[in-house]
Length: 343
Ligand SMILES: [Fe+2]
Image 1: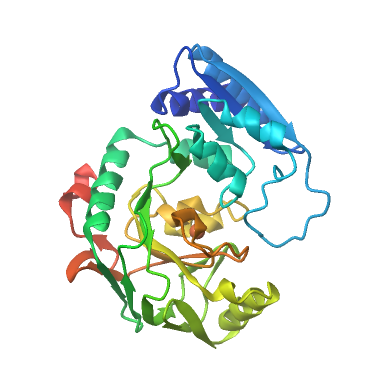
Image 2 (image 1 turned 30 degrees about the vertical axis):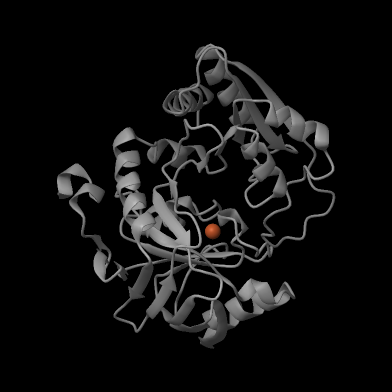
């Protein structure tokens, strides 16, 4: 993307995030990655009259190749963390999520926006106030629920006991002190109680395995008991999933993590065909997907901080909150969650 266009979309982002005169915006990058992002955000912050700085940390000394979450590269760098804690807003172009350092920075009152997806996707899924409002309607419903049930024509039937963990919303910008968001995003989630997820999940062709960034080709049957996956059966996709989780050597890699649904009608289910190398935010956000996740729940305040993490958006599933149908085979039932043209 042309840098001046990139500048403009970052200006729209920071405007939505209510950056203003008197504030300080920090931009974090790692190694040689996303230096153009830093330029665009610094330009935008300046345009809005805020102070800004760019903090660049080195690339990791050794890269494992696996998507191990939680290692921010800031663990041995307290001065850098201090600098970020002192900013009003941090634009994270490195993916700090699940790290101790991200939680410390948020606890200091700094709001954090992660921006790591390709610029073309940032532009196409530019957040809006209208989308935020719809996401917040969904979050309110989820907050009140005590049980979630997910079913599918392929045979999924799983129950999550709720209430232990907070409901989180992601709508792609953040104007609230201490709050984190990810650009682009449009979904809500919470987590089941640690031993309160039971049932069967059948992944169907077209469901998405992140971070493999692949579409499931053959059905995978997951047996879940008391919050942990006890069985993974099926063909090649099941074997790949099993082999990957096993490689972490951590039984907590089988834990059930966050669960919720997506709301952005502009996000495409087929998005991986265009941005196969991205983080998959388009897939997490597409309208009516039901996404569950495997691995850490420390993001929600839980005890599991395993580095093995999957997000699995599924098509055509139904989701109930306390027996009320909320997602009906991929269609949102509540008019206030739908885009204006679909009410
Ligand atoms: Fe996740």
